[in-house]
Amino acid sequence: MTYNRDMKLYNTMSKQKEEFTTVQPGIAQIYSCGPTVYNTAHIGNLRAYICGDILKKTLRFNGYQIEDVMNITDVGHLVGDGDDGEDKVETTARKLGLHPLQIAQKFTDIFMNDLKRLNVIPAKHIVPATQCIDGMINLINTLEAKGCTYRTSDGIYFDASTFPDYYQLSKGSLEGNLGGARVALGEKRNINDFALWKFVSPNTIQKWDSPWGVGCPGWHIECSAISMQYLPVPFDIHTGGVDHIPVHHTNEIAQTQTATGKKMCNFWFHNEFMTIDGGKMSKSLGNVYTLDDLINQGYDPMHLRLLMLQTIYRSVLNFTFTALNGARENYRNIVTALRRHQASTTPTDPQIINELRHAFTDAINNDLNTPTALAVLHQALKQPNSQDIYQLITAEFDQVLSLSLAAAVSTEENTIIPDAINELAAQRLAAKKQRDWATADALRNKITAAGYQINDTVDGYTITKIN
Ligand code: AMP
Ligand code: ZN
Image (cartoon, rainbow, N blue to C red; front, side, top):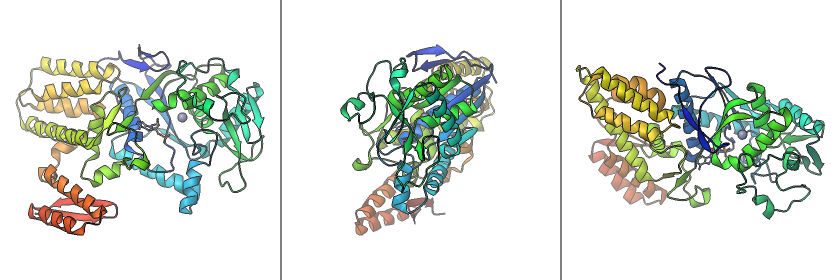
C-alpha cells in the first residue's frame, strides 16, 4: 500500500538529507558491504544489517521493488585492516586446522541464521568474494590500462594521486587516512595508496593466477567488482558502518569512478556505531556479545531489534543490559496492549486510523526516524481497545518494524519467562563460570522452587515452565 513516496534520506556524500529518488522508477538498487566471515558477528556488526533492513523495509512500504546485493568477504581482508598481515579467514583456518572455505562457510551460516532470527531479509544476491575473482582481475586490468596502478615487491597498488577527488566522501576529515602517516610508507608512493592484488607466500592457501603473478585480491576491490557485476553504475544506495567512510568506501569510489568515469552510487547510507557500556567493544575487554550470548541469557532476538529501533541509525547506540532490559519491558508492554486490542470488536474512527498511519509514514520517511515511529505506535496503543488498532500495528507498522508482533500476540502467555527468573538464571551462569558450584546449585533450587526448570546446553541454558 503506498501512502507517501516522499522520502528523505541522509546522504554521507552531501552531508545532508536529500529527497530520495531512484535511477529506475520504482526500483531501488542497493549494495551492502557484507561481513568478513572469520568469526561470529557481534551485535555491533548486526546493527549495520538491521539498519540496512529498516531502510529496505521502508522503501518497500513506499512501494519500491528492491534489487540488492551483498558481498561476503572470504578472502582479502587482512589482520591489520590495511595492506599488511595475514588474511583474517586464513588465520582462523590455521588455528582450527580447517580450510579457509570451511571457516567462511561456517561463519556465513551463523551470520545468515542471525539475520533470520532478527527478521533481516537477506539480499537477493549474496556473493562471496572468492566467486568473483575474474571480475576483480578484469577491473584491476582496466585500472592498470588507465595508468593508475604500480607494482611493488608485494603487490599491485592503486595510485591514489591519480584520483584527485579522493576525499569526496570523507571530505577532508582525515581520520583513518592519517593512520598512514604514522606507519612506514614502505614501497608505497602515497599514504592513501592501497593494494589491489597481493602476491602471497608459498604457504597461503587461497591464491589465484593473475596477469601479475600468483596472489589474492586486496580487500576493497571486491566491493567495486561485485557491485559492477550485479548493478548498474551509478546504482542507488550503498550501505555500511561509519568506520568504512574514510578508507574502504573511499577506496571503492576511487576504483569504480576511475574505471567507469561515473560516480559509484547516488546515496551513501552509513549507520553509526554501537558501543558497549560507553566504550568500544573489544575481545580483550570481554564485552563483545553475539546474538547467541543474549539468547542464552533469556533474551529474544526481537528485544535486541527493538533496542536498535529505539535509537536513530545515525546516532551512536550505547548497549547496556539495563537498556536491553528496558527494550524487553517495552516489547512485552506492546504485546500485552496488542492482545487487548485484538480481543476487542469495537471499531476506531477511520480518521484516527488515517492520522496515525500518516504520522507513522512521515516518521519513517524522515530519514528512517524509528524512535518517532515507535512513539506513534505507543500513541496508537493508547487508543480505546479496537481490532482496527491491532490491524494497523501488526499488518502495517510491523511491515517496517519487523518485530514479529502478530506472532508474539498469539504466543501462549505462559511461555514468557519472568524477568526475575531470567535474572536468577544469569546469576547462575556467572557463578558456574567462576566454578562457584554451591551458589550455582542454590540458584537452580530457587528457580525450580519458583516453578521453572533450567536446562544446560553446550553454550548456555534454556528455561522452561514446569507444568
Ligand atoms: P566487518 O565484518 O568487520 O566487515 O563488519 C561488518 C559491518 O559491521 C560493517 O558494515 C561495519 O561497518 C559494521 N560494524 C562493525 N563494528 C560495528 C559497531 N560496533 N557498530 C555498528 N556497526 C559496526
Ligand atoms: Zn565493501
